[in-house]
Image (cartoon, rainbow, N blue to C red; front, top):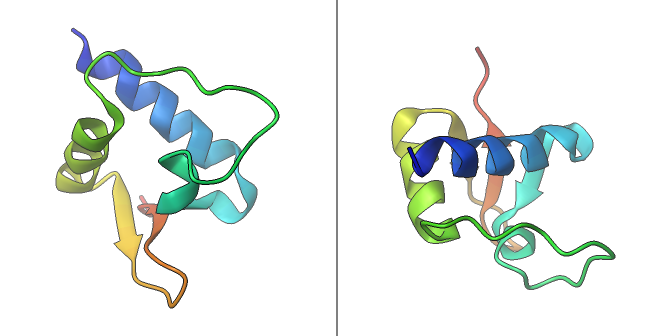
Length: 73
């Protein structure tokens, strides 16, 4: 029950971003944003591993660090 709202919030954040991809550093809070993001109950690292394992997100290595992308349907 706690996983579903957290998954939705992370996926919606990635979907709303430009090109449907977000640097991992930005998700973890390394970059200051105007709006504070909601904190999931289970923690962001758990949800990211869950979404990567479920195949809903892909991690793409770049010189600036990992980039999280929505998996294509």
